[in-house]
Image 1 (cartoon, rainbow, N blue to C red):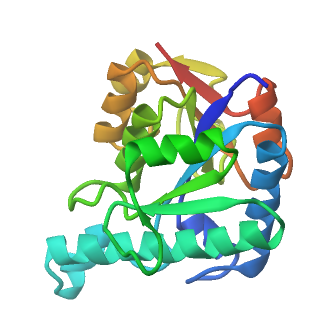
Image 2: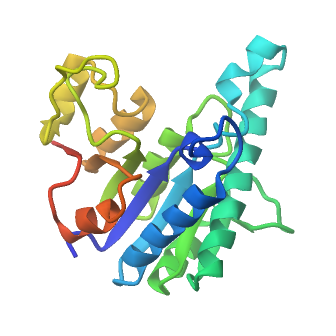
Length: 235
């Protein structure tokens, strides 16, 4: 395996599949199977998942909800997704732990860095919920922060596109995909990878990022094995 400890970032919208809201059971099962393939190879896996399929805090003010309140609602949405993913993984025999930045002791464990690392060392898949526990921070920022804290080898950002392009490939058919790109190039060219806080955290801590298509079966395992999948962002 190219990577021994990874942090996988999934968007909440990815769980919708072809639906317009909520969780698509077939997509949830697909992701669980992909994660199991990697975990069964002895790779230590942590996961951060968004909540945009249920509620997005950044849009709360449009519907008359205070931004801080809305962000906390979004954090709870990530916990709902985390619980769903945990259930899907345990259903197929993968031991997991859900750790929350907001204490909800009846549902999951509080985030404690040493405890998270110990779970990983014991071969459990660790799901981090509730973002950073603070408003105004995205789950991308939570993914970068948690990856640094647990000393992950890489952040794998699973999306619906197969990497970083010179332009939006869904709008511009002439857009070219990068195989490798530097942090500096991403910044100078204004390429869309993560929000700037998350991206800067990775850059300052020399933490590589791989953007890839999570919806293609086998992609996650190929990536961890060292095959050229998606776009790699490094120093």
